[in-house]
Length: 606
Figure 1 (cartoon, helix red, strand yellow):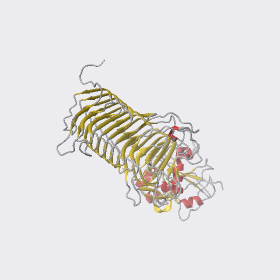
Figure 2: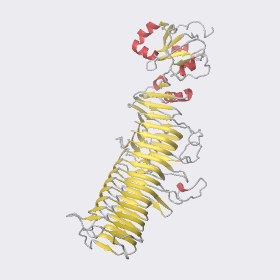
Figure 3: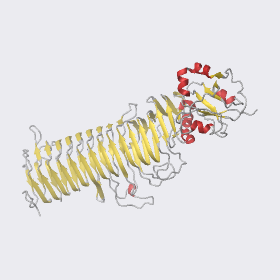
């Protein structure tokens, strides 16, 4: 019999229901909500595929005479089809309305949106704005079933439909295979959703190993919201990433938890741009030797990073990480992330450009909490770093290092981090320094502004500088086991209007630098490592063009005494020294200026 004619054959114990009876059976309110906004018509015109999956939601017409309640198994079993029926699937958590699509003879049965009958007829679920649910495809979320195939089938809908929102109800979904997310996908998970890794790969990638993408042409326009990506590192100790995203643009992660990752990264961003990561949590990490691993790692598309074949050095830029938390998960055997946000690999002429890290909380990082490696035009602001290894490490590829060589092994000139604002951060306890701007003879970090930060209890320096064209101003520091601020091999650096208290060594030390200005800093209780061993301000080495103006050095009663309030070595040249208040009771004299012919008047120099 022609499957387009007649009535469906008997489906188990179900019989065709009138519209009135079906509404009564499934509940008037829920049925009305399902039916509202849809139209099914057998009249000539667009195919059912167009009507169901078109850009606008059709509306139900009164000329649909019959609704048929059935199950997926029964619909698969029928051999005759009536085009005027609207089929309602009654399987628990897979309920929904289907229509027969006579124009489709090739779509595969995926359980969730396409059902193929024994006669080869295709029945299509009526969708609202391309929204699908993983439960429709058979996902259980019970922590026992293998939900990988069903989950992947739901993600595949973005390929079949051109775009999709994939909804995931609360539950624990066991993943025995990597998941692949495609362009134009919105993965929307309940806050009680857990994707549990039960294999040795990543939890999620936006590319397969066989994909070849260049530039930013890969699977982009992706949003991932809610849920927990649990890499289950204790039980699956092979290296993995929570997510690996490459060669794409326009990616948003919001309210996602990345948990217990093994030796890799929470999110690996390789050759991507226009990325927003906000209100996410990165908790729990395991590793053997990779003590520097980043929860969010930035890298260009290198052979070492991108599993696909297009290692075309596409840079990662325009990434914002805001209002996130980085710390411990509490899982026995795991530790907090070594580094919250950063990079440790680069390529000549491929900068990490326009990286914004703001208003995050990072606790107990064992390496540097934030590592701007070859970043430029970037802002690090409003973060609270608590009990970390080091605070912020502005890092530059060394000459001759792998990050300074091209694919042929040819070394290129050093390309330092540049044009970075570090402002308004709170650093509360560190086993290293608070902020370190790295430099080399071949090239140093430059155009850095370090302003209005608060640091307490650093085991290293408050700030260590090897840089050019840098301003350090308006910061408040208390408690360092080394120097307050140390500047070595620097050029054109201004250190002004800072409050420093209780540094173990020198308050501010400048050595072998030029064109350095120290002005209006207040230094209290420097030299607390021992009486008479350190200075409030120490200018040593063959420095030149120093201006030391309006600084105040004090030692409180009961504190250890300084050697000098201000020490200037004989190798320093072209010193201007004005209006400093050095009344600090130093053991060897409040002022010891050994430089030749310092300028100590306010007259103009010409």
